[in-house]
Amino acid sequence: MEKLTTKIIFITLALVLAGCSSSVKEIEIVPDKSAQALFVDARTALDNGLYQKAISTLSAIDSRFPFGPISHQVQLDLIYAYYKVGDSAQGIALTDRFLRLNPNNPNVDYVYYMRALINLSTEDNLFQDIVGIDRSDRDPSAAREAFNDLKRVVTNYPESKYAADSRKRMIEIKSRLAKYELSVAAFYLKRGAYASAANRGRYIIEYFTPSPEVEPALEIMIECYDKLGLVDLKKNTLQVLAANYPNNSLIK
Image 1 (cartoon, one colour):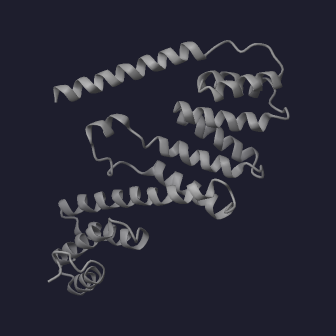
Image 2 (spheres, helix red, strand yellow):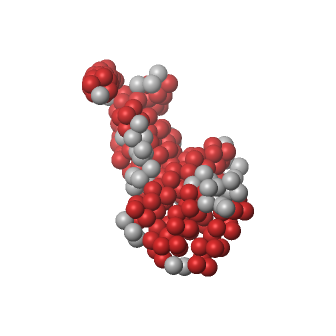
Image 3 (cartoon, one colour):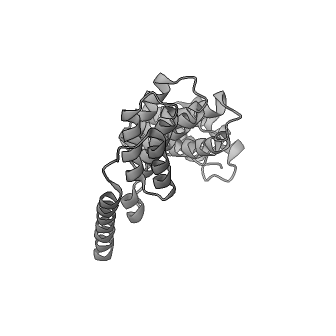
């Protein structure tokens, strides 16, 4: 336990120092240049991973030349830079603004895709990963928002270069959401709320099949129906379990 605590403290200090160091080096007073010259500076900063510097320069262009010919690209680059520095609030606000003001922009697929990535980034937690904490019971609102945006890309822009990755990420998110529903079902079961637990299990069957969570969901449903004295529902669910998981321990 002591070694783990020391490791977390070390990583925390390293991240804080790295953040301070990067902010000191990257944030500079934006010079008085033309929009094109500043845009070149911003792109150079992006290419070199100096995202805070890029944000400062791009923000200056956005405020000084809001209606210029590169204004849309500036905003797109700002969205990416905010994503890279982990500023989800600013990133989401900017994507929302872009979509509201430019619904027919040819890069709308990219903006939906980036908003999904930003929402997914809020699900990441370095320290919980380090100590092995199960996060399946956390509020999945951000994951749902990401799923909806990725679905928009796949459905409305099937030829988009972001469509393939969007499909892949949708599968991963479905697993995350199924785990959440299963954790809620187990919570209800543990507390004797059998009807609520069974309903959560049925929700998993309806919306997350196929997934690894289906088998335990069926098990929960069977136990709940048994506790509630719902013989026919228990029998039908056992038949579904037997047909799909014949080696399950509940199958006699």
